[in-house]
Image 1: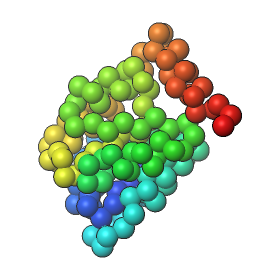
Image 2: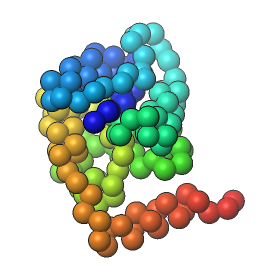
Image 3: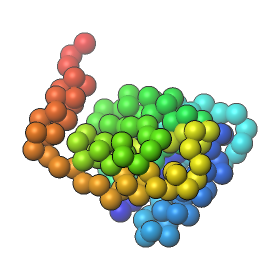
Length: 148
């Protein structure tokens, strides 16, 4: 499985640790983020990973900025993306099981690396349950497809 990872300047160190963690678990990781701690704009990286997931260049995405919020908002503007910000493992698991999320966002200033690893593991190991949840995901996607 290929995982795209993106980050801004506030999350360079966490990204490096997350990449190693994912590689140790056997995932192929594609880096779309910055490796510089110079201030940069998180929407650029949210969009890059969003586009990579939407185009199936990668299977899933992980985004990291200060809170996870801004970068996930940018990713969610890409058609077909369901990005979720999580600060604990339970919501991460349910976001995959019930909402079929395809991007996980984390806040480098909110969670430490060990908690981030737990959140990531729960998210990656969860599977979409379908059934009644599929109908709801379809409803979400219908909102995205409405003519404006």
